[in-house]
Length: 204
Image (cartoon, rainbow, N blue to C red; front, side, top):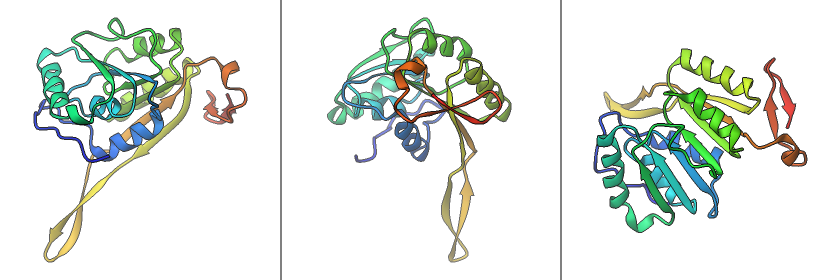
């Protein structure tokens, strides 16, 4: 798919394109999926999800950021295939009860959001965190709910010219929590793994 257009800024900045690529590889959205996002901000993740999924519900608690999501979504209208609903609401109250995949772009109320994911048996849950202390709390929250499958830490560097050669500027590291809130019995034969409370992989 061609790069999406993000002509409107929300000050907080979009999730970097390289990070979005990993997010969507973990979400593995299909054309009949209902995708939900908490904290749409510029709409970068929402727009790319809308190119893959059948339905998208995006929550943003700040009206000005939701307006930015809406404008950027309109700028990519030709590539959007999903039915998209934007909600100026807090999570978890504004989340749908029938989502197949969920992305948390921020840490506000994340424990309550994870409770919602468990209660509604969301199949794929991905959460991005930039602060180490929050990453630790989020990892424990995933483990406590028995939904943790994977923790990924990665960093991207971009090259720039320096004295006729190439040097690199590094972006902040990203901690990514990946999990599933579907009952284990549904996945007995899929070969998937969950990370147990002691940090070792266990069968789902």
